[in-house]
Image (cartoon, rainbow, N blue to C red):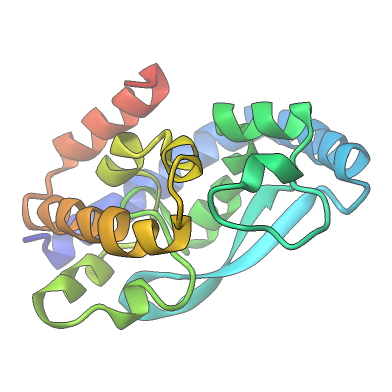
Length: 196
């Protein structure tokens, strides 16, 4: 089980890493915001409330990739241009989350932050998932890196997500918290960079 000392070390590592990389990534992020603005004809930064550590909501930042419309789970790429699809597939749309890490809403590694109605409704032992900050990447993120493609093939993506994928993600994220180590975080960051 992750300890308070490990959480403090994790935060120091996150803050230090983002301070090192943000100066180099600031210009690319600004360029992506401009591209997102032109591509979607809306402001290039997309914000949405997600559930964070201890069940506290926070505002997540992403590059906007979808045009206006009623977006349905499993059919998101239908609302994205070719540029938007590329940004989503390459995960470049997630770069603004460096600011979430900087201000302490997120960590580089942890459970992906969900919409209200998922992590905030966890019961009993499952709530240990909320002990850590949500991550830009994590073990469940790596397993379900092609989640949109999986959902596209389902007759009822919402039901499949809630009853199959979400249940599995909770198990994966519980195991992450229960067996946490700094080395594990480094391994998951490396796997994310190498796209493995």
